[in-house]
Length: 258
Image 1: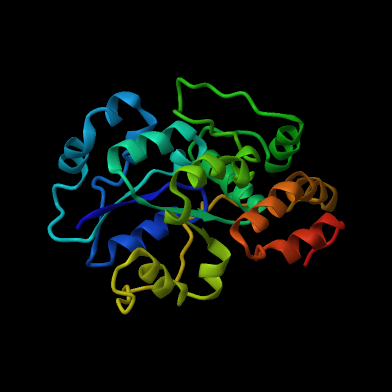
Image 2 (image 1 turned 135 degrees about the horizontal axis):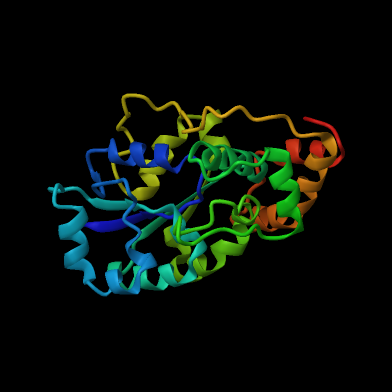
């Protein structure tokens, strides 16, 4: 029986590479085209078109694969997408890939800068974002290109997805995949496909911008770690394991570096 799989975020956390690992497995077919992302469940109108439309539109290339997968990283931030996905897909497997929120914020800044949307220096925008949300023009992008810190408070966005999908939702941490590429086999097993399959390249090349990242001073790093402390603690409790960036975060919160 064919089942659906959703990669729902978070942005700038290596989800594009995760999708390539999934697509490389002969028992998984990922939605095509992959770019732009389908984002079906961000729209009530598109979701209402139903399962047959979704499969015809994005999985016409599929044959006898066990899983049909979609990556749309904006889903994580929209609780209504969880309900729509459940209504249309029934009981999809859900993957959420996360990373150190400060590293994510810097990657996000570089991406927005590369895209021509961001003109301000890294330290300036992060300091400003600590004071509150940064304004943006919805006419230019469907989601804010400047939510550098909001998107790193992962636990705020996970609750509705966990509530809806429970044990069918898996949280992956990018740093764990970087440290041990063997985690790919565990991921395949979790998804119910052959764990013995080995992609041609199981290393983890994060799709980072080439934009140089100016170093952040110790005071700003401390303020950023303070901003994420409660969220990180709640996330560790939620997933039942320590966060791999916790030692570095602790050092930077004290004004130093791990």
